[in-house]
Length: 111
Image (cartoon, rainbow, N blue to C red; front, side):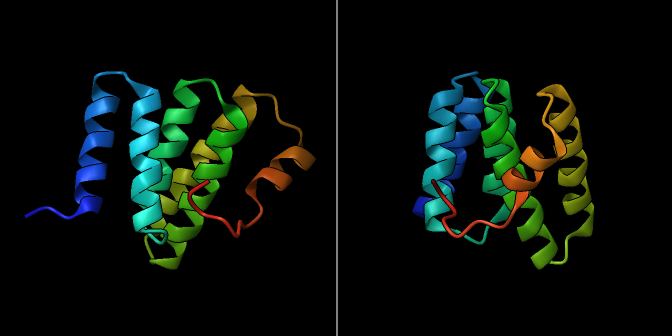
């Protein structure tokens, strides 16, 4: 039987594929609340917020994913997140100070 975490992640994927990004975000936030140390949920939240043109949220979530991937010794995905942050910074015209503020470590993980 799938766990509630697996259900939320599957719902997030379903809503993402069908381009219901707000619903996908809700599902991945629920998944992140169930697994605060799971970087994939934050990666998807970053991606989805970018789809909705929410640049600051996209960068915050991508930075959270990067940090958790590094913590889990997944340097390939951490670097992928770092590259996405650079792309997002250019896309949304973030200045260096703003980017540093957005990427600093967070205490609250699922908000």
